[in-house]
Amino acid sequence: MNTTKSSGRSLQGRRLLAGLLFGAWVGAMQAQTSPDPAPSTSPEAAAQTSAESKMDGKVDGPGTVTTPGLVLSADGAYVLDVQNKLAWLRCVEGMTWNGHNCVGEPRLMTFTTAQALAGARAKAEGVAWRLPRIHELRRIKEDAASATLFPADPQGWTWSGNASISVAQTNPYNYDNIANGSTNQQERLSARMGWAVHLGNGESRGDVSRRTALVVRLVRPYQP
Image (cartoon, rainbow, N blue to C red; front, side, top):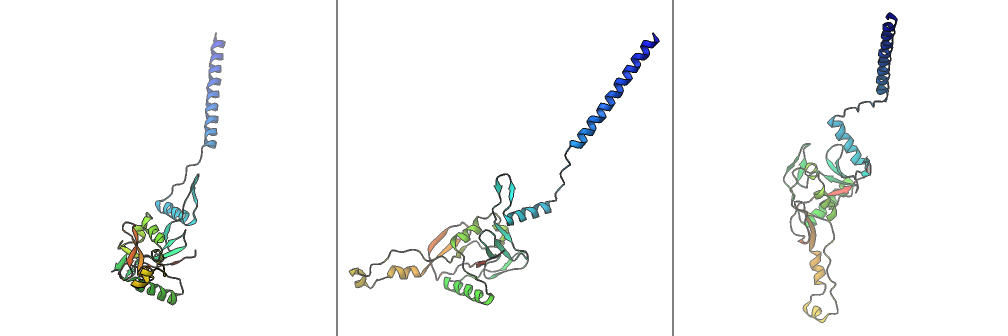
């Protein structure tokens, strides 16, 4: 009788010991296969990584490629269009960058004055400053970061360097043209017109008199 009870207790003990050993083995296996927790990333580090990816056109995720856009230069004085290799001053002509914002009043100029300014600055600095083209001005308007990158922008009509509007050729052999002295009249009219872009709503038009005083923002090539 005592032998039977002793055997039962021994069997229970062996079962208990086997259960404890099995539980310890399972815990060790789970510890080996569990992935390490992901390191935390500060907002500043995340922002820096995002900016670097934007500059380099890196892949952010499966099947998604970051398109280079508008970013600040290292000194914060220029806005760089990485994709089109252009550098913009952060302020329009007449305003200056004080390290935090654009101060002063925009200097409104006629088309001829704006072109002369670009030429003089290009000669003085040895950099090809010029009036921007229509699609380049529109890119500024359409970029989501525009309001931050170009603070205090007047967002009004701005001169573009695009060629004058196309006009129909006048027939120099047309008797009425000769009689009225209107040979090449349309061409002469076209020469007095220019293109401008409204940076408030993105509208563009090519029938603006070149004598009109508008906002001027110059652009130059940029080599990374």
